[in-house]
Amino acid sequence: MEIQVFGGTGMQLSVLGFGCGAVGGLVVRGDPLDQERTVARAIDAGVNYFDTAVQYGNGESEKNLGRVLQTLKPANVVVGTKVRLPSGDFGRIADAVAKSLEGSLARLRLDRVDIFHLHNAIMETGGGEALSVRQVLDEVVPAFEQLRQQGKIDTREVRSQLYGFLADALTSRGPFNPTPTKVYAIMDALEMGVLSSRDKNVPFWLGPAQGTSTTGLIACRNGVVNIENRTLQPHDPGLFQVNCLPFDYGAAAPTYPPLWQSFLRQLWPGDEDGKRARLTLQEMFGLMLTADTRYQKIFMIVGPKRSGKGTIARVLTRMLGPDNVANPPSPA
Image (tube, rainbow, N blue to C red; front, side):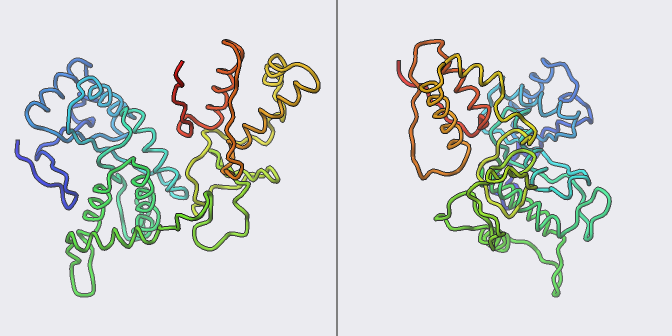
């Protein structure tokens, strides 16, 4: 199989890729054993690029490709998927891009993809389901760059997107004619545009401060909660956060959930010592929810088997989000 370098990315791709779309439909709706045999045969023939998208079978292509690759465990295959933004998400492009990729990674059973395509049409001023040039440069590219920094897409894909975007670009002197030097210069400019001092404590405002202290801000799925006054603010691209709680904030939720309170009272009964223990646990949860690390506390819960330690840990993990928790097992 002939291998070529993919644009300016440095990726070595087979000249024939494996399309996982609805044309033919094997990976979308084929028999699982046929899917495995066909993908294995393609890999044996030297094909190393597999192209899918969430739109292919409404996610079925990604699910089936992920299952097949997990079964075959091939080395050095390149997987590309795509995001297509509906016009209803044009007001929240960064969030929509991130959510789409998270769903794709889950279906593909991968931690990252090698290539992440923008599936929308791009027109100078946008319109309908097409994005404008300004939207791509100001919102889509920074969203892709953030995902790259999180390790979910490869830097080579961002360069690939730039090559494709700049291929038809014009200057006052004629065609732009993208070259590796020009593309790397643009990449460098993009990185400098989003660079912030490592001395800042997260969360912080990008650019000028917005007038709201970030000390008490916690990002949730449906917005940013100010724990000082329990108000919910919309997500703001100017607020830099490194994590987000995986559930919605509900102002009407009970302050003291009865089932949880009953569980804690079973563990620590009594009005004095028991209350002190319950309040200590509450303090632990509160400190872990915020980004405040001034106290540098280390908590350890000691007790016999089946005494509630695992339940507390599971509740805390769900509250913080599994992606925000590291819990290596301790030696017996």
